[in-house]
Image (cartoon, rainbow, N blue to C red; front, side, top):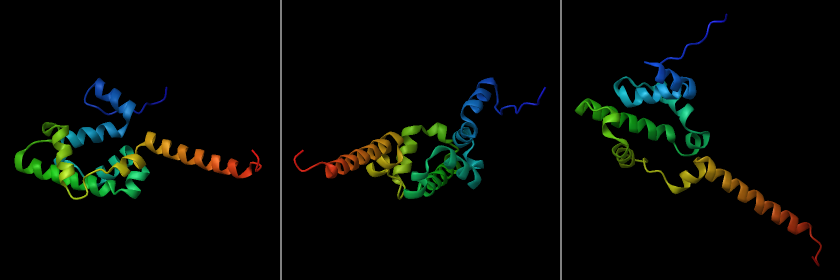
Length: 140
């Protein structure tokens, strides 16, 4: 019998989520419930697991996320409220109020996979039509 790597979690339901989502679940839980102990290493791991390379490379996801975490830590120190207590809409308002916190339409199109796939597909179709159009005889 081989030893198994037992998943981490407070109970069976959390252990199941850890198996399905990996460390992203644990980091999300820490971000929601234990913001005062959030570290730079947590930020690096969270972004590696939750955002794609286009967001990190072209749109400063790390800088935006770090600024948001710093603001959530400040709110926690002043009020004692964890991010889960604030609610998603309040957190989005906080993020958008920070410098560079607003997500543009261009970023949405480039970062989100379905939009990006559609743009790449459209470019390939246009290229193929132009390429085929140049190889056609003049009378066609």
